[in-house]
Every structure is written in structure tokens, then in C-alpha cells.
Image (cartoon, rainbow, N blue to C red; front, side, top):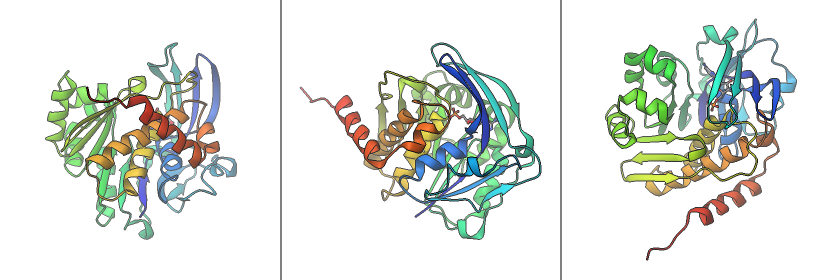
Length: 302
Ligand code: AMP
């Protein structure tokens, strides 16, 4: 039982109303891997440059994360810089230096090919398909994407979506992909493209899931101090798929618990810059907050 993840491994420079972090560890595959590794072994596929050293790798070591698929190339690591407005709901990309990520060609080590679940992080949909061609028969294929690919490579993205079981996007992306403003209609249109389950992330407003056995809604965990939302989406995906991969068939009850587990992990991610909070997190803290989620949302029928 292992998850294969392909995505960015990055240096992030982040400015929030509460402070600034310069060239700290980031990237979709980094957040995803650390979150998912609380539940199942993770096989990481990505690329870094020569400037990515032991200090950064330390985040992955001592966890259930296999690094054979992390390619190291001549050049600099992908660098992303973002700035958040005061309410932390909107963010502006200040700069993106693709560096070694520009020529990234996912190469899946033979040992990874029998991974039971695959998470296709937000990369070119053509590359996402190339990953699927190199794996055997994953039980679950989950996928993320963004407006850049939705508008830039719509046909390629549609071909990829036909092979995806679970799509995770934010509300703006769901609207753009479907051409529908209403999220219920958007979900119907997106599910007709392939994914049986659609998870729509709405930041501080939580998550809506549309599946074969109906819909499910969860709030975000109400926190007094939200410090940096970067990586919350990927951390959600790591907790969600990590839980699901270890939980038997992805039927409705397991999917609902996975949404809460994803939301639990994401709520820790936003408490500090970079992966800082995830790296000190314990399984006991996860389980405690998961239980508080149940109390938060539970009510009796009249
Ligand atoms: P999230 O906040 O979940 O949307 O993810 C933020 C992470 O995505 C950051 O750590 C960035 O390094 C990474 N990222 C930003 N832009 C891109 C991009 N164009 N391709 C891949 N990863 C990116």
C-alpha cells in the first residue's frame, strides 16, 4: 500500500500580513508527501536543482517518504513567490522561476510502478498522462490542476480527466473547467468528463464533495491564528488520499472521513510558514483535532 505523488518541489518566498519567509521549502509534492506519510508510504517523483541540499531533504527523511524518484539536475530549483492580501483569501503570484522544473519529465522508478494510489499534482496534463502510462494498475487516481492548464491545454486536460477517479480543485477552477457558475451544475458537468468524485476546495469556507453516493460538505476548522495558507490545498490532498489509500474501498463513508482528515491536516499547515507546523505534528495531535471536527459538525435530527 503506497501512494505515488508527482508534483513540484520548490523554494517559496511568501509574504503574508503577518510576516515574510524567504526561499523556504514548498511545492505541491512536498506538502502532499509529508501529509500523506502520516498514513501510508509515499513515493515522491519530482525534480530539484543543485541548490536543494540536506537542510531541505531533512524534511522528508525519517518519514515514510521514498526519494529515489526525486531527480537532481544541474541548475536551480523551482522558485515561486506569492503575496497574500489582508484577509488571506486572495493571493497574487509575484514571480515564478521554473528553473529545472521547466524541462521536468517524470521518470517513475520501477519500484514505484505498483503503487496502489497515484496523486497527479498540478503539472502539464500531458505529463500527468505520461505518469499514468508508467504505472501498473492503481486502485485510485487523484488529480489536481489549475487555471493555467484549464485555459491553456483544455483538450489535453480532458484526455487526462478521462483516466482520473478523483479531481481536487478550488471553486474558481471548478467554474472555469465546467463553464458553470453554480457549483452543483459544475460538478455534474465535471463528473461527466471522467472523475467519479469531485472535491471542491473553498479555502476558509471548507470543502464540498460530489460523488456517486451524493454530496458531502465540511467546514474548515475554525482557527484563531491563520498564518500562511500556502500549501493548504496540497496538504488537504495528502491527508485525504493518504487516509483513503489506507482505508479499503473508496466508498462514501471512507470518502467522507477522508475529507475530514484532509481538512484536519490542512488546518495545521496554515498555522505556520512553509511545512514548519507539519514537521512538528504528531499522530496524536491529528487524531485529537479529527475528533474535535466531529463535535464541530455533529447535530441531532429533530
Ligand atoms: P497551494 O497553496 O496548495 O495552491 O500550493 C502552493 C504551492 O504550489 C507552493 O508551495 C508553490 O511552490 C507551488 N506552485 C506554485 N505555482 C506552481 C506551478 N505553476 N506549478 C507547480 N507548483 C506551483
